[in-house]
Length: 365
Figure 1: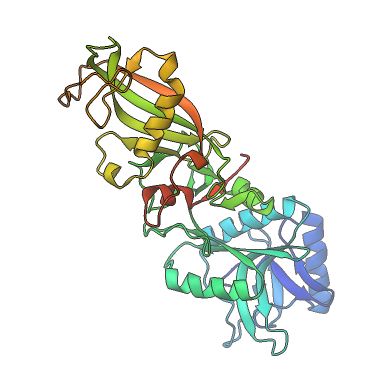
Figure 2 (figure 1 turned 90 degrees about the vertical axis):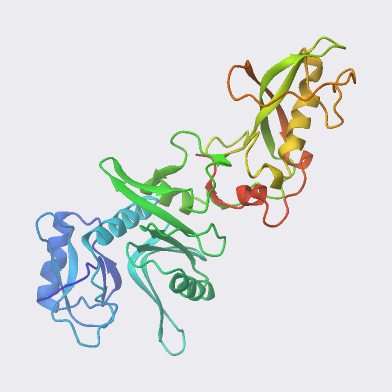
């Protein structure tokens, strides 16, 4: 008796069955029936299966004898099988989705195997395949397999554990999954993110795997939900330091040092930010528009002014000298005001603002 992978589902005379989440009595009844009828067979090759209940492991099926032609024995690691079980269990807990592990998609006419999914969740005309890739995560291979899912009307979500970074992509959703003593965590950030340009609030960059699966099946996993939505409200913030007093209006002259903006309705969305001397500032389309929008909103409420691009006080037009840069010693403060995406220039291809908007995020967390 052998077994490399740990399948939780099999074929029976009554159709596909799953042993995942079955209680002790159900498992024993299944084992007894299989001993009497030899009725459980592998989806991958049709070979007979038996039920194994080894100590410390979930009940699962194994091949009684693995045929040489079997393509299903993929040598999955214990960690791969454990994560697959976590995903399947959470998907089953929604009660709205039919969940199948080691699911196989076939051509309707030729019965040729088109794809194999670690976990497949189906409801009405919707289907989501969850794939776990803990080693040798190859972008081109995942892209080819994703195309086969798409051709079958299946949405594929990929979990990887690799130092190799993958870009945020609508067509190929890839998420890093990590495990610590507190559980399994899915990162919403990517290796291509720019931490000097946007940052997640504490605890918002990742979420538990089970919560992520539930959110995806509930429809709360969204691609670029705010791109092109002009009515989206942002909270703009300009950090400044005091650099003197205007000789004309006697207002305090301030100089902006950093610019920030966050989506007002979504605390889990990363905060966009620009340091006043950030190397990407010159490539930003939003830096000065945010400064101007915040300033125009609060200018009558504060006793401050700043040096405009023509060198004059923006309040009374008195000429102002440019203050030398000083990292420390000046008094700091912040001005905040609401604004909308439609108040800002439309991001161009390749801009940091477009990268900030085009990402996967979980809404209504």
